Length: 299
Image 1 (cartoon, rainbow, N blue to C red):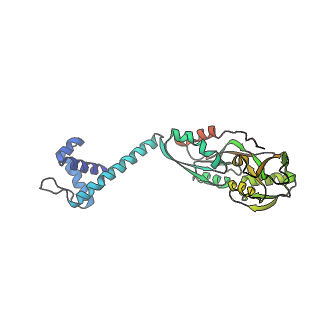
Image 2: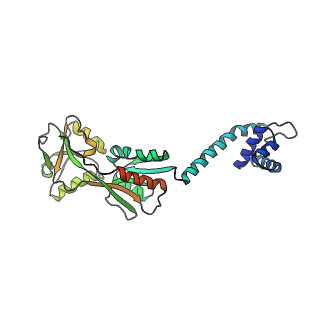
Image 3: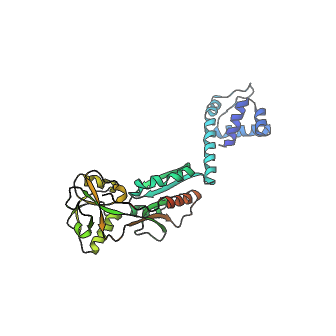
């Protein structure tokens, strides 16, 4: 069904005349007649009574009601397509690991939404490993994650280190220490995230490199939930400083002495997929707004 014929039909209804419709649309009257015959043939119904003063059939009245909706939807679609071509609209898929997803991304996205108010953004929160897989499979346009096990088809742009410290109840025997060494953690019951979590893997590796074996009490899949379990007295946890500032009531945060490296977080993208204007702008804005800021540990 040709939308031009629907527009012609609606114009005929507006004027109650084939001739006046032809004049408004700058068509020959024979063109108007031909379009109506074709439309009726495609629908298999008569729309306008013949040989009488202008009058719609029942089918014509139904199409008249729905025709405006069809044209409005088409116009909206056309506007969105035009905006998409101009780079003013579209849909961008972003992934992020915690705590960046909750504590950094909402603020970093604000300038992008101001510049592209008609772009839809979907945010997927997953582990770094899963995010890399989604970028490689073209299920995400960009991902904020760590660089571990990045395949050759995925590019990684380093942005900032996610600093880690030890959160513990303020009644803990180590709570009065200025900072904590990794050997002091060996026999302390620790609350941990899942094995796929880069923060867990990082501290485990640094302890293993020193011949130390961590002691685990409870595994909690959500990084942001760890602080609440520490607050409840279940144990201590290595956490990103960003997500526990200020420390919850009844807890203290301690730096880790001689901790070799914090996790490097950056932007992952699929190198085999071309970037449009919207995705390129988002990448530039995130690169600017996710810059590194030193997180002071409040005593």
